[in-house]
Image (cartoon, rainbow, N blue to C red; front, side, top):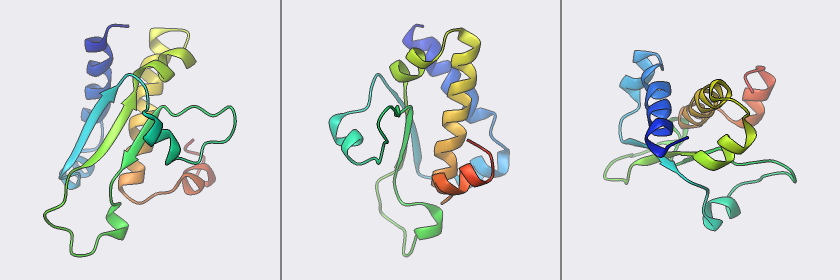
Length: 121
């Protein structure tokens, strides 16, 4: 898939979020990158065989105290790992949507164990 097409899928997934979420998501930059960097990989707790498809880097809403004059939080969606995990364009679209929702949940302070317990992912 061309980079522009993938970026459009990410944009669509963000725009599909409920408006009240988007209103709260101030100072958040959503990016598309080819693959995670070594630094990004080293900061995650991936189990063997797991793939990093997206990453939230920042201070979750639930942990903010005196939050001003800070760099934007960053949500990064990784193109190649998603494409490698998917067989069809429809699967890529759905995985992008799931990845965006997952990383936005982290922005709101929701952890991976909580998402799993709720049956979200």
